[in-house]
Length: 397
Image 1 (cartoon, rainbow, N blue to C red):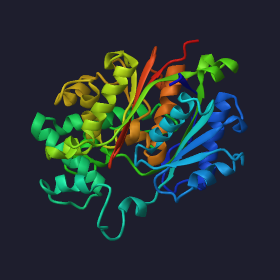
Image 2 (spheres, one colour; image 1 turned 120 degrees about the vertical axis):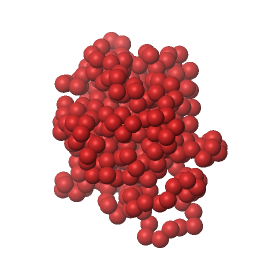
Image 3 (cartoon, rainbow, N blue to C red; image 1 turned 90 degrees about the vertical axis):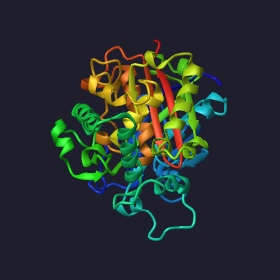
């Protein structure tokens, strides 16, 4: 693999579904034109594109880019559930790293609906989460909340029983991330919450309240991925964020063998992907300055702390309580506000993480800038299942 860099990023505001009158080609156009402008190149220089989304029809990627230019380049449509955006980025990275392109575009977008999130009207004979449901059925009664919320809410119940994690510790994740989002003008929510406001918010499932759950969102994000030769030829060294290592993992047998909801929601595949990227890059979690991770629910931020190695098993509640994962701590986790507060348009999330971390490493994050950020990590999870972990390094120039 050749060295690979991101030289341009952009994202739209993430907004409540249906609150902005735009078509998905319009939202994609806003993100892609922003990323190309950031890179200082034209669409005619892009040689391949990977376009990620979950709920749009087949070949929506082509339609999303046709208004930007009809250049005839190869386009691949990507759907890997909530890990879609990072999977599109991985494809672009592999094309450039493998010498198949000098410039590739990774795009993620979503225009969500309540009906899409509710799932099919009738239960099909096979679903993408059959194995996950089997584990949950063996331990929990089904509630009225959406299935994904029940998966994570029950994982929270298990974490509390196994490790003594408290509702207050879970709520502190949301307090932290909502506070971070007050500095992010692109976030869907930009209001701070007190601990008591999070704890007494509308109950959703188990210990989870509404402000601990990511909302349905519309939005798009994009990244321009290029080779080292392209960086040098176009004088982009000052803004070229290197992708040091990237791994995509799926569920192994251990995800279901132990009957653990923590395993069901992706702890194992996160742990494997993280170990591989650290081995490839030759660094450890202590070398990382800033992290964007998949806090679709507050419990998943705690589970991910443990899987990434920020702390030992069962120690994540105490870690967030200590202030180690916010400004002034060992790491700043989800400076953007994370999925809980920035929003979670499924196909766009992974590339929004890449955008935020590129800004952080380039010193362009404004009021939420992490001081002296040099190494960044992104974690993007999709049940069913896929987890992408990516390490980035700041420009060397």
